[in-house]
Image (cartoon, rainbow, N blue to C red; front, side, top):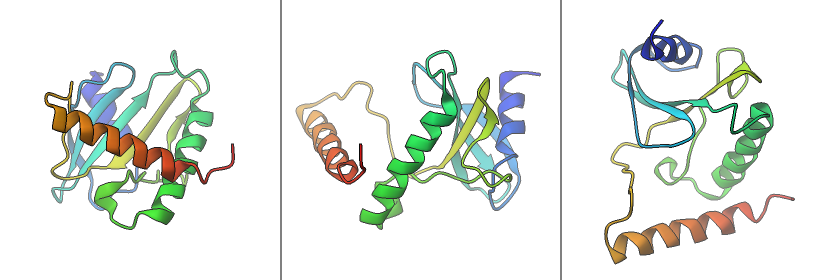
Length: 142
């Protein structure tokens, strides 16, 4: 089975409104395998296979991501300004186990990856976003 076929099979394990019909590699991440998923209704999602070599306890990683996304969701109502996990059909926020862990986010239409930021304005925007993120997660008990 190709990696795209495998990703499409895992995408089907998440609660999306219509069946996933296509996946393609997405972004330029260095750790996790990332795919853009399109469902039969034209919805888009970001599917990631967590690198279990780099993240030896992926379930703990997912529990932390859930804490962060929930904390930010309480502060930021606009879904275009925050990540939103898509639940799996099993009721968890990921699929798989310690040796293979997949997660899915809602895709933010119009978003873009700055690799690397190309102008002082882009660097300033990245710095502002990082600062906003740090303030938002400061409410989470260490």
